[in-house]
Image 1 (cartoon, rainbow, N blue to C red):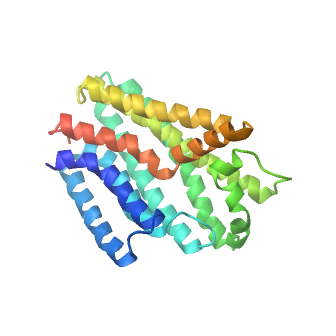
Image 2 (cartoon, rainbow, N blue to C red):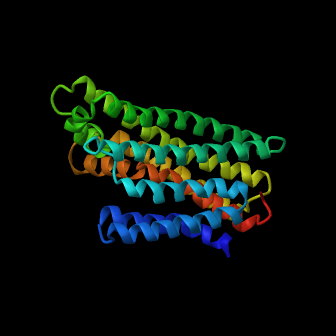
Length: 275
């Protein structure tokens, strides 16, 4: 049963997060109870899915259960921003470990090539992302949180800065844009990494053709749309605004856990003894 519940980790986490942090339909005491129950369920799923599948499913559970408590990161709430960065760093690290684990397991077989490329993509992306997350802590510790708060609405939101920066941007604005673009790169590389891991798992005989094609199509499609939309965001008019909005939506950090979670669920479903 837990193998099938792995498919629910991502959508249930998203629903819980939206209900509490976005729609504000759930009060904090109720959310804490639901969040603990969700985290416990994720732990059970991960335990029974096996090491390999569990490492790919777990990042979604970590992001939705921990980052939802802090809300969207903003320098207006520096403590919450640092806590959010810690949760995101934990999820990204687990995903990296999962990619490396897959690579090690398939290294002597036909899946070596795509697995090595997947690890390369995830390592590069995670490095970029850790720079982003460490910078958030550095902003708080250095006392620059008020300065960031003054410009982050236009310099730290992809759907805004991809449309272009008004006036002459100062150094802090350019730095925030650069750091956020590193997050965009991380999510796109995480998508590509998941696609390559699916190919590696298929070549190793762990994953059937149909779920492999599904994960590859979804992951590669999301990476392509996010990349093209980011470029087209500067196009004038409603089309450019829609493209920037799409790029923003597809590069929210929790989106990086969707393809890996689906891959992990598929591995748990099609290879129950894999560990």
